[in-house]
Image (cartoon, rainbow, N blue to C red; front, side, top):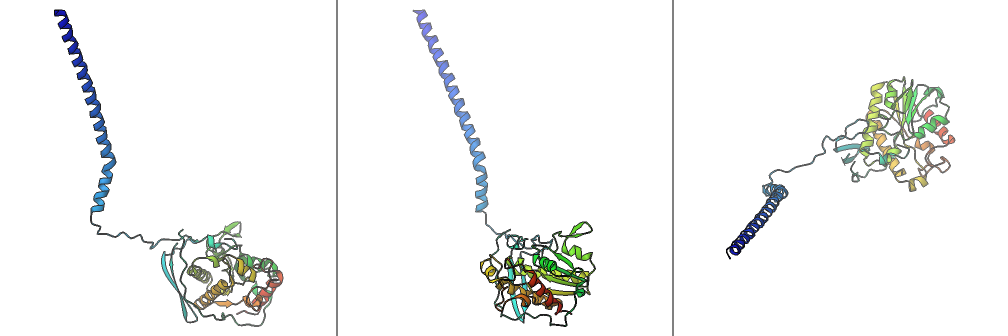
Amino acid sequence: MINQKYTQKKSKRRKKRRLKRKIKRMLLITGTFLLFSLLFSIVIFLPYQGDAQHLQEPNNKTTVSSCENTTISLDDEEHSCESTTTVSLNNEEISQDTESSQSSDEPSQKNEPSQNTEPSQENTTAVKETIPETTPSSLPVENDYFNDAVFIGDSRTEGFCMYTDLANAKAYAHKGLTVDTVFTDPVININGSKLSIVEALRQTSFQKVYIMLGVNETGWAYNSIFIEKYTKLVDEIQTINPNAIIYLQSILPVSNEVSSTHDYIKNEKINEYNRFIVQIAKEKNVHYLNVAEAVASPNGALPDDAAVDGIHLKKEYCEKWLEYLKKHTI
């Protein structure tokens, strides 16, 4: 009887000990879970609490993202993202406000420095149609007049130099050349070194310069960049040789078919750019040549038989171009 009671008590004590161990394990597991939950909550929600406090603080400052003094890499020149260029044409002004940031013979629409946010279309005031002023006609000269001349241009100028008998003139021309790549692209080989047009001019003896650039640039978003770069080229030539005679040739038109179907080369745009060139010639005291009148049809477009592709002149029309230059000299 005594043994039975002892056994029962012992059994009860075992059960109590087991129960205590279970309770301790449950408390330990529960405590561990609560501790990890607390740590997790602190890690996850503490940053948001800081953000909430920041949002509750009074916002006394306005942060402005400014483009001022941002540079566009076009022949290592700086362009302010917010600039205003004013060009006067026959006592009228074209004001162009630009906000932005860029070459084949149909290039620069995709090369804009750009320059690379998409700029909105610039606002340009209407300009009255005027006949471009040109260097007056003169007695024709011989081919040797061009012996000390440099011709700067794109593939149209390449064709001109190839089809005309000007063996001693220098052709600093390249397919797709523009008024910005004359400063940057190494396309001229002098003594085994590849140089840009401007670098080559610094190493060249010349007395006359003929420039025809612009057809590739008609796809640019901002007229002001074309004006700035063209003006800079003239300034650079005048710095290299202050006594040189500089002729700015008009951009030749394209055929009606090209003008009506091409993405950006349009005769209307070419005429607009020619007006810019007229004004640059006036401001820089150099000579404008309206070469277009030597090759254009009565409607102002390039005749269908003048070029295989409506852009690049055949030999016959390059010779007309040369005859015009011979009869318009200083």
